[in-house]
Image (tube, rainbow over all chains, first blue to last red):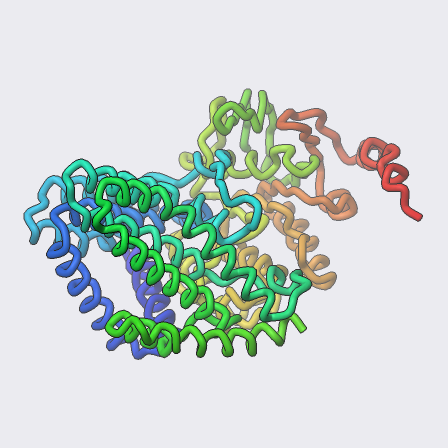
Length: 308
Length: 226
């Protein structure tokens, strides 16, 4: 057990290093993560009766991140089989426990059970099958964010569409609106990971043109993904058409901010200050315009070093 | 000794390895050659216990996996792990206690830096150091010379010779034929998942010529270089 203990100590150490690199003291960072998790869980469960499904899916997604093939192959190659199994099980139980606790608190016992089941099963699963199966994507024309992102999150997208269907079935517009928010969050997540400098350097474009191309692709493809939800909700809830259009506009503004935020700190990850700025705009959405302009000029400055 | 008998491996409908028969003896260095996609890495993963397969794979060890040191083509590293911590993790995983990493840092790597900041060659050297200090009996080295500087290449060559003299089983792949000729006792040729032939030392020159002829053909002429 001693060697397993070292592994978990090391994982915790690495987690704290991530927080430090993010520009935040580990103690404050951990406290913030707990607070944000509890706060957003309460908000989500107060928002909709169906929040449990989305919450469970989010939990399974987080747990599944540990089933990444190269990570599992490495652990499997260095640990004896039995230790590897124990290690992965403990890892998944630890990660899923906050989600399970919240589900139990909200008396979603079946979902909590489902979560436990998935966490246990995923500890023995490595995403091998997905490696050989090429998931078709409608976004092949302009790689890579949406092409790769779609392949990584297609299950979540299907789930969002499922929520739209459910919202129509039960006549709950809010649930449909939530599915649209989910699509925006998924699209924003495509711009979290930094690409290698090479993928920027190969463009024969000025920083301005490069950014415009990126934004055009993001706006077009995100709108495509939202369109089925908007059409369905627009037909069933015609009275809410204006709300849908406003939601689309706000969602796209946040998507643009995400793209610009990524390049504003490139080649480093977005800083805490950037995150705080975006968080402030959630409290007062019109501020997003100013934040976008600020990120835009910072991005141009960063990209100049690579593209010119 | 490791014995492979009628090993098959498929991903869905795609057969990657077909009816493989091979033996790997202690104190010998076996090379595996083949084009990209011939199935070399998959074979290594099957032997290492990282991939399920059908067929028979037997050895003298109760659990072969626990005696293998596997160096993948692209070793995996956690994002914020230092070289020293990586070595400690690999050592601990096999149940060994601490060792003098500075003494065993034969490639003179900056062990206190994040391994993610290492170059390709440095990552390979770190992963190789890790499996060496684990005191394994079987070494599977997938492209050990790739991306590594010339001095380290010489050192790796010598390490392989030393492992052989210590009676360890070494299985390696390389696209650099000279490296294989210098280190291997036997070379297995894979093509489209099938074992085409097994060649011993006296047949290495003929194999090299044959591979050259098959590979080059009229391909360069087809490029119409001017």
